[in-house]
Image (cartoon, rainbow, N blue to C red; front, top):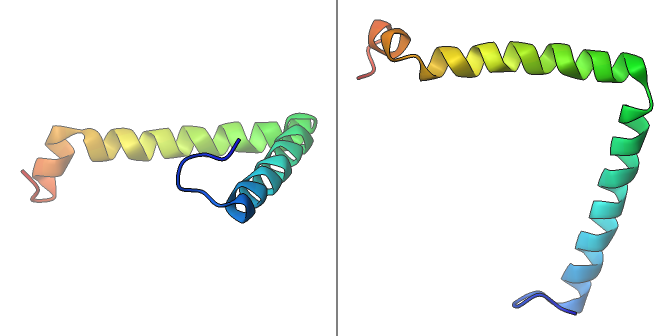
Length: 64
């Protein structure tokens, strides 16, 4: 079941890492305050991304 180019140790490490990621995701989604904080953070990040992608903003700061 090894992915092309990955050793058994790399596959094991990836599975272990993915397991920890899924456990953390479950912990976060079970905590309403953490979910609320993540949503607020995401809103701020979206505003920043939108600003960077705005052609007028880019012109304003000298990027064409």
